[in-house]
Length: 116
Length: 114
Image (tube, rainbow over all chains, first blue to last red):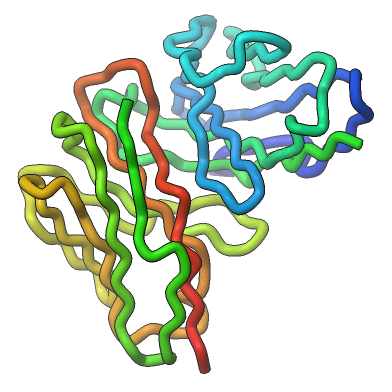
């Protein structure tokens, strides 16, 4: 079991470009959560998805950010027209059951986005 | 939403001594109380968790205690070792579903002095 896989590990984008972050959940897991971690800060919830469904996106900025988890393939977090304030570590976590049971998350290694 | 605070923000202890980190939360509906450890540049990893029907849980050198009435829970690390140096996050949540995922505290930097 390869665990939660995120790629790329590091991503550098110029202001105004698009950033696409990918997350493949653990085998057998169908629930994916995205968190953002700013330097010296805790993790902030962004979005919770199941296959082909966004369950809760209450933590997502209203503009420029979107997420999907298609039937086939990884979950994608997309940030359009990136700005310097988007520079952060983005962590994906997966679980086998929905968060109503909260058995704890398994996090991926994260994608460190740097906007220059 | 849940308001989570951790204290202290930085804790320095001598190797071999004990460390205690406290997490206070605001949502009385919370019934799941995990602690995550994050080493520099690495992913957060669950190290111990407790549910509200239990007051204390221990796993070797680490333990978590819960005071639901006062709405706080604490991480205890005994006989600290250099590899315990990391940032520790609490992340209370509840199993009734709702709008948010786990709400993480801002973290506590634990420094083990040799």
